[in-house]
Image (cartoon, rainbow, N blue to C red; front, side, top):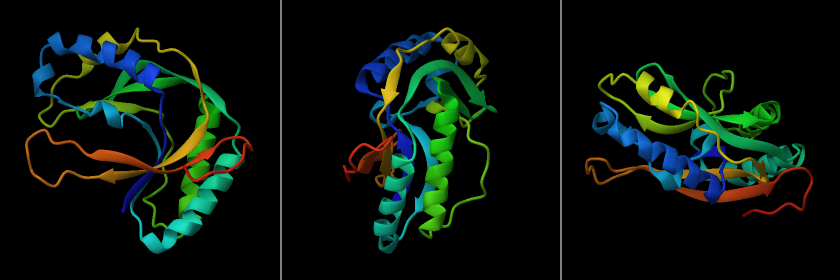
Length: 193
C-alpha cells in the first residue's frame, strides 16, 4: 500500500484555507491549474511510497515511538509559495522546529522498519493546493495567498495515511486518502487510530 506520515489540519483551519483558495478562482490561469482535493489537504512529513504489508507492525510501533517522543506543537496555515512552475502551496507558521523534528523522526522510523525511503532532503512544511502541467505563472496566486493567516491549533497526533491513486482515468480524478493509523504526540496514551 502507498503510505505517508502526515499532520492533518483540523476542519476549521481547512475551511479557512478553502475560503482563501476560492478567491484565487478569478485569477488568470486558474482554470489551467489542477486544484488538489480539499478532503486530502495535509502536511506530508515522510513519503514512503509502496510499503509491504509485512512491514506494517514494525512501522506502526516505530511511528508510535516517534510520536511519543515529540511534544504537541502549535501550528497555523500561513501565506503561500511555489515550487518552480509546478506546485502552488500554503505554508505553516508556528513551532516549525518541532514539526521538522517530527518529520525527521517519521522518516527514521520508516527507514528502521525497512521501508526503502528516497534520498533524504531538508523538510519544508507545505500543503499543496494546486499543480500546473503547462507552466502557468504561479506568482499572482502566491501574491494573493501571501496575506493569508489561519487560526492557530495544537497538533495532537502523527497520522499514517494511505494514498489510493485514481484508477478510472477520468479527467480531474484525485487520489483518495485514508488514515490507517494515528498516534498522540507527547506521551499521551498510545492508540492505533
